[in-house]
Each structure stands twice: as structure tokens, then as C-alpha cells.
Image (cartoon, rainbow over all chains, first blue to last red; front, side, top):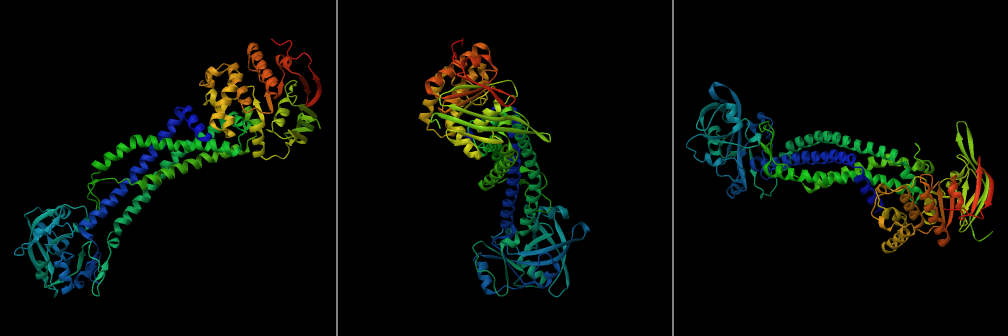
Length: 386
Length: 238
């Protein structure tokens, strides 16, 4: 208790020096929490977007299907059996047929992937209801794809594909809707058609490449279809986040080290300048560990003050950013990244940040204070350098 | 052994390393102090007064010899045992007052009681009593920076006396004070010595202090060159 009281008084008494340290350290707190919150917010948003637009409650894949290898598309489709048709009718799965194709917007050649999806599915947010009219070859595409092909709603583009026998065929598709989504993998290079149309175009009647499952689907894998859990489908985003978090930690570490160096420097100076006070504590009956404790608490208290100071300007800032988000103006980077990011500040993040900073400040305060243990009280009382 | 003997020093030698050799600050000092004495170690600078005071206060250890306070040997004490001894039984008064600048007068005096974990109500009573002894009850909330030298030293006296120690060691307590304040301080300490039977040992070369001492131990070059009773102590004091 004495240590805390003395630490408080000494810190207040030290005036500007204390407030400079506290300001720098509070800045470290705010930047660490802001950056981690931003990454967490991105991760959260990304996962929600992925689930909403692509992943659902997981997929059932044809065993040969590899979404990164278009060569596999040709052989990775299979008949939809009655059991799966029943599940589809119950709204628990949405079948998707995948076919590699070429598009010729304005006479240019662009390699695309045609995806046939049931128009009445409600598992993912792709606006498939626009594909309900099977009398025309309508397509929905994302904004990225529209930009790439330089097309707008109402335009027609020529596409060419190979049917189940390997024979090339071509038709014009009508862009009925351009949708905006933050998941590039449902947008970049993708043209979404009605499942029935694509099945007819390829001759793959009643066949699908994979199924998007609803959250309530819980039957796992079947003999013919491989269950792909959501964690597998979101792992790219998880890995990007992990690497961003790692990179951020280096920056945060540097910032924290600078702030801690200021505390370390203050501690060294304090112990150097306050030898007479240290000698007095010992003469009055304090043990050396108690005196070390006073100086350690004093240094560590910077981090507590900094947390309070950081809260004063950090909390309003965090609340504002969490409410209105922050736009960096680079939404279209090929990553699952929204135009506006809404940082997410969890209690866990705040708790661990405060704990780590307080612990680090305590350690850097303790290191110079250890010197007190070697001081001779008689010399300290004279204020002599030791 | 006289049961009123509170401090016993036998053949104390203290050497300080200097270069490849050493400097002998105390050379074969043997002394006893009785309970309630108002004694002083006097002598010029470098005679060993402060070194001897530091050994009595368990802030330093002798190179050779035996030292005990209240029959407890000071040789071989751990840091913790030394701290406990100082905390409970020994009060210090320094030339430069050594008050804690961030604490008020009240808190400075209270500090040693906090170390002993004295309950709040007892602490409050003892602090106010100590401040009454030195006439500073009107300054309880003042910071040391707001006090004069004399007032600061009176706070230091109150701080040393508040725990009612057996021994108070005062190292040049009047060196930074003018004549009027010096006499005021010394009268206060003499009064406390008489009323509370606390043993006071001074290290001084101040003539004003010597007027008050009942026993004067003269040191020169680390040796005792005189140990006399002052029959007129206090009589010529202002």
C-alpha cells in the first residue's frame, strides 16, 4: 500500500516527465488496440461475408473438384440423387455446377468460370432470383467482373464453353444484374447462371459439382460427396489475417519498446537522482526489496496512468470508428476486404493489451530498480554515486 | 553487565578500501551507552563520528569488533533483521532532514508507523502526539517544500520519535540551521530525552549542540581521545 501511495505521489510530483511517458505509452495502447481491433474487425467482417456469400454452413464437393485447378472441373460433376434433391427442396443445400469457359466482351478473350446455381436458393446472398427465367440465358456477375469485362446491366456478352462431350458451344448471355460483394472469389472471373440453363448448355442434366450447405445442415459427408467444413473454406482469409496480425505486431512491438525505453530511462534517472531518498527509506526501516518495490510500482504505474489516459481519448475514438467504420479506399484488392472496415474491440483484446503493457512496464521498471539491492545505505544517504 | 546499558561497542575497527590499501575510519573503539543518555560524538570532519553512528544504527557493519544494541548483536544481521531493528528501535535525524518531498508533514511522520503496520486510529493518535511534541500541529498538511529549515528538522524529529524508539541517532542535526533554530531543536530533543527516556546520540562538531550534551565523546582519527561527562549541560544553553 505504501508503495502504491508513494508511487502515485512521486509520479504526480514528477510533473511533465510523468505525463510525457504516460502520453507516449497511452499512444502505444491506443495504436495497439486500434490496429488489432481493425484486424479483428476485418476478420469478423470477412468471415461473415464469406459465410453469407460463399461458404454457408460448409460445402459438399465432388471428390475430384479442386476450386484452384480448373482442369478438374471437367470431371468433377455427378448426378444429384433423390436424397440431395429432397434436401434442396427443404432449402438445406444449394447445388452448383462449375464449368470452365471463355468470354468475349468487346472482342477480347477472358477466361471465366461459369457457375450454375439454383435460382430459388436462399443459402448465400448471390442475387440468384434474377436467374429464375430459364427462357433466356441470364447471368449475374459481381462489380469486379463487370469492371473487368467493361459491361453494365442489360449488356450481352458472348461466352464459349465445352459440353460434356468436349464439343465447343457458344451463346450470348444477358447481364441481368450486377451485384456488389466483398468476397472476390464469388465475383472475380465468375459468371453466375441458372443451374438448369448451365445443365442444358453442357448436357450435364441433373448434375452438380458441389453443394453449398445451410447452417442447419448437419449430415456431414456422404459416400459420393466430400464434406468441406467452413474452416477449410475460410482458411485463406484466416492466413491473411494471421500474416497481417504478425506484421502489425512487429510495428506495435517497436512502438511499445519506444514507450518502454522512456520508462526505463526515467527509472534509471530516478534511481540515480534519488539515492538520498533510497537511503532514507532504508534508514527508516524499509528492506531493500520494499524499496525496489516502490520504484518498480512507480515505473509500472506509468502503464496504469497511460491506460487511463488512453481510455480518455481512445474510447471515444474506438466507439466512433466501430460505429462509422474506416475506409482506406482500397476495397478491391483481391482480398475479402470491405470498402469500409468496422474495427472490433473485444474485451479479450483490451484485457490482453493492458496486461501485456503493464507487465512489460513492470519488467522495465524492475530492471534498473534491482540496482538498489547493491546500494550501501550509508553512501545512498550522502547521495553519492554508486 | 549493567542492565541499563543499551549500546555496547567492543574493539570496533572500520576500514574502507582506498586504492590498493585501506583507510581506517575507526580504530579499536570500545564504548557503552546507557538508557536515556544524551551523548555526542564530537570531533573534526573525518574523525569517524558518522561511521560510528552508522554502525550503531545498523546501516553499516564494522570490519572487526562486536556491536550490540539492547543485547542484540549487530554483527551478522541480515538486511531484513537490520531493517526491522531500525524500524522498531532506532530513529534517525539527518543534517539534510531527508523528508519525503511528496508527502505532507503528517504523512512523513506517519511513514515509519505504516512500515510497522500500526492500526489507523493508533497511528493518527501517535502522529498528532509527535507533532505536538515539536509544535507543528498547524502544519500537518504542509509539504516539506513549504517549511523552513527549523520546521523541517522538527518534522524529522517527530518522525524519529513517533515510534518511541529506544535510540535516536542524530547526524549533525543543526548543521543547516541558524542559531535560534538550532537551540529550539536541541531544546525539543532534550525535552523528549528527559520525558521519554530515549537515548540520543549525536555526531556533531557544533559548539551549540555540545552545550546540551550530558556526555561528550571526542574522536580524532578514528580513536576516542576523550569521554567526559558534561556537568553543566543545558545550563548555558540559550
